[in-house]
Length: 196
Image (spheres, rainbow, N blue to C red):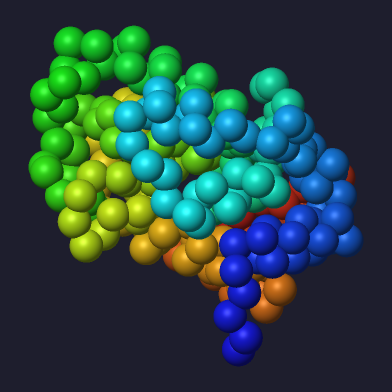
């Protein structure tokens, strides 16, 4: 199998959606204007991984209140501006613990409050999110699932953005599961991940 970079993976995912799940594909935006990474990194106070920067140059998320569950099991990707808005909301919600979050030190480890080094990349439309973990360590850049109700992350879902997109691309193009979710398409042309 030929290895694809983030841009190729995202492009192929969007093309697949356009052919098989056109309603979902139509909801996805291209970033306009392109993200200002210097401003984002200044506010996040952390350097973004190259693969996240690359994804945000081709993925602009969706419009406000529009769901497009491209990422299993039910996550809509954020563009850079949406991610910043969500991160700011977490900063406000978790203000009392922002400087000393109830989380282990290293990337990929557990946490029971929101960590400033978690950069949101997708949401479920309620309060749960996929986040890129930028704490230090060997797993820096991994993708975690933030569960708002239980205020925790457990284990990494993917090694990074590229691994996440590669698994989604493979699931869509080969009809195999991504984690514990299988891709299906609804009658009205939306992607729907079935948990099995």
